[in-house]
Image 1 (tube, rainbow, N blue to C red):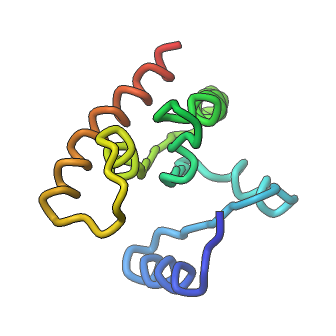
Image 2: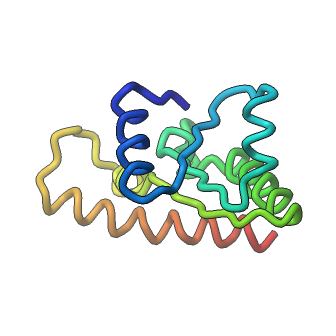
Length: 130
């Protein structure tokens, strides 16, 4: 995952207002990232729609979901509180409804998001129950 300057500034603003420090760990974990993970009690994992959506005929990339859930379970067993934030409802809904155009009307986006949200939550539920 990439974090641009605007994201870093947003995290700093959040820390200044709340006193809660936000640490960003992305890519390969180095010594600093491992220390941050080991000292953290609560970890927020943000999964973007690009990871959720499958490029083949399947709607959802189950391999990625399985890997993420496996890591969440391992972190939870280490006593970490995990908060999972998942994008992808609109992308899954568009693919499911076979919307080809990118400039959808608001009502089309709402319909696609509604369909996609059901698919998304059921995919996470199925994966966690394995």
